[in-house]
Image 1 (cartoon, rainbow, N blue to C red):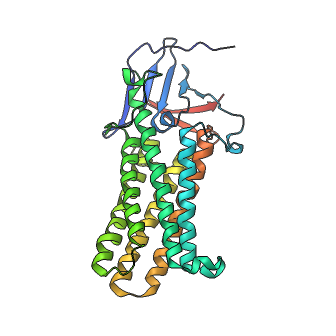
Image 2 (image 1 turned 180 degrees about the vertical axis):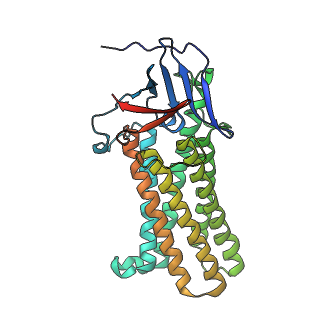
Image 3 (image 1 turned 120 degrees about the vertical axis):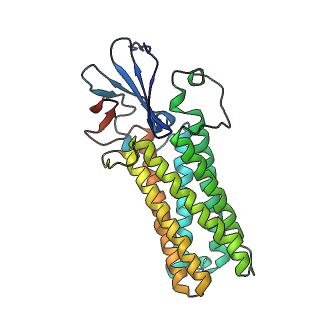
Length: 315
């Protein structure tokens, strides 16, 4: 049996945080509301339908989203997998740098370690590029416009500064490209301190700042305000773990500064340690993106309506 799809009876209502549109509410002809959240919309998840009593119903995609891992037909799945591989490479490089005795002898070679970091940065950039395309073609602000019409042609580039997910994806993509330069330049032998500052440390620091900004914009997108604590929401944990990973990457870059100025190896150990912590944060967040795309969320979640809190039930 197919259910009737109600059409909006009025123009959509756009909820903003500053300049960013984080959700769109459509008033349906039967009195219900359909609420589309920015991150859920670009991930291809169904909107929440609010009945007249303010109860939200989210259509269940699968019976148990935590037990599903395979979805190569979904762009969001490839983004998660590529981020997972990139994070694993950064973790492996950090482990090999600080604890080579626990790994095969091949990881005693600094050239091999630098190559692992570089390969990991390529996976990060690939994932960030797909994530940017996802944000361009899944803009919640397009709902109710010709750009949001189903079946429209795929868009490879666009300027969408009012979408927090797009801004986060664009800034993170820039950061990953800088990490490409950083890790590639680290493989160049015989660099002096000026060369290390310009080719390695500078893109590392700027890239880390980009990751910090991107992770905060992602938190705004899922919070629908400047900050929130929503431990029952999978998307909130993804944003928070990304932010923690970004903070760790920033600390690793700061330790690298002291390493260059002092030459003392304990700073190198600290830089590698925080790189490992950052990689673990991004690995965890990337893993959660897989059950998220199957509709995973916490029990008794609360979704904010424009007029207040409204409980949401999974159908």
